[in-house]
Image (cartoon, rainbow, N blue to C red; front, side):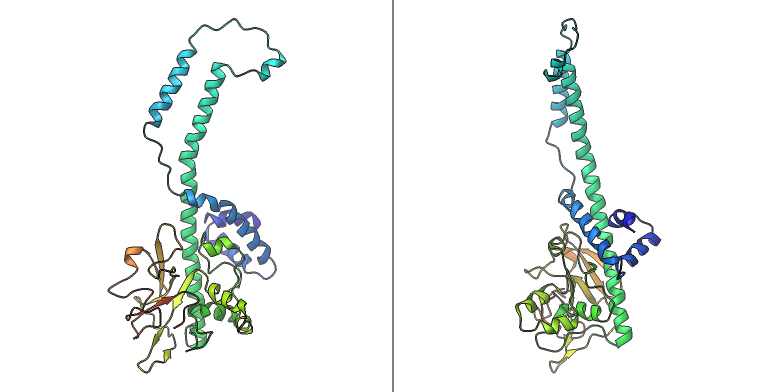
Length: 323
């Protein structure tokens, strides 16, 4: 599978090969080394993400370049001395006018190639990144709904206590053997958490064993990865209602996790936001479309980062947020 990793990274494989790579990545034997190599490849192309937008050349660059070449071309019309036999010392001599022009033209061609090609490569990386996010959301949707079919309820945090966190959905799915702890499914390519490397989802048992230790806070902060999960809603008497799969097309189940400001996510430089809805479909929205009809994606109807106040009050919390 190693020969397919680059194609998988750029989403250039056909569906059959892509599924074969994904199957290999979660395999207990060959998966760990393959995932390590894939992370190395991602790190190698990550700097190009910063240059994903086309470079705007300075005004008048073409005219100045042509004038420069024309000036040096006229210099070539001056009669040159008769050639003499070449000596070894000539290799160290400054280049002639013609050689200088040739080098300038090569340099200009290389610069033009960089200006034209680098944005195309960056665009391919950006497109691949978007497709990988979409595949990961599809995988998460299948895992969450599969858990719901087996247990009768979607992953739901407890009503209270230190384990009552939005990100508890991830250890729940790992312990239910529906997610692999370190396969990167919860990461957005190029995000801060992705760049830090080594992300791993704890099991429920590992999380409980860390209670009362400094490690617990770090696990809680990162266990949900780059995606936020529903905080559910509370009943009239204040109880947290278990999450049920009602297959609502308008009700957010997951989304890009909110930034500290609580208004948007920082996962994508272009400020697109992905939202996975309860019926399993997802949408890719710009920042001005994520809060709909006075229903804030990251706050309940009372303006708080907490569980909704009624069944239709959907709130997406970051990993550490409590209902």
